[in-house]
Length: 320
Image (tube, rainbow, N blue to C red; front, top):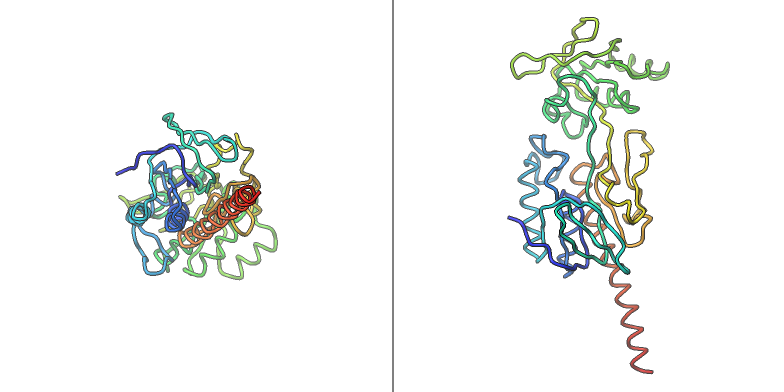
């Protein structure tokens, strides 16, 4: 089920994940006209369940989003299937054009388009992503507790990942791969925590049927592993915002891109807020949803300020 996109809204939410839907829910309950535009490609689609979300632990990502869509619709919000192609200024608001040519206008925007994980180019990684190729211990650590875990060095946070996953298992191996070697301090930390270091480039993941059993190095060495941890480069879905001068920049962690905001979710472009992974790459579903709700409330407050100024000006004019 999808709703028809109408001509004009108070707010358009660009992205229909947890952040976007919760922002839309807040706005719809505030009696704002709101449309969520969603391309149907959530970042967590490969995962079997959402974790760390109070009262919804283990719910499938698809079920969570389906329920969220219906809740937004229940308060009069629209949820529209489509991909945003461009955003332009339109007077004091915005014109949002979809890839299929549809056009709608909005007074405010909530960017909740998320990000794309660019995975290491190692055979087997993409095929097993979200199953036993993982990145977040808080999302998947419990599911691989006490198993052999190999951490593929593929980003500036890889040593940190190895130290984190050590909390869930005593059997952790750091695969140096082609990344720069750990510093002396990092090597000492890994050794102190009992994390082994395997030198050499990783050639491929190895399986037995549909079960991951390890990785094979370029020199033929096999390293046993029931789970492989990677550090994907996180690329913000924000390319369509160039027309209003909003661009993604490097995240301070060095792990990828994000769209910076202030504490309220407001971006540097007036009238545009952002929430979820597009601005906070490490946010889990609960944090993304909370940020969406907070941004929705801030957008409503901003609209009220604008409407109040207009009402005061109209009253003064009427009174002469």
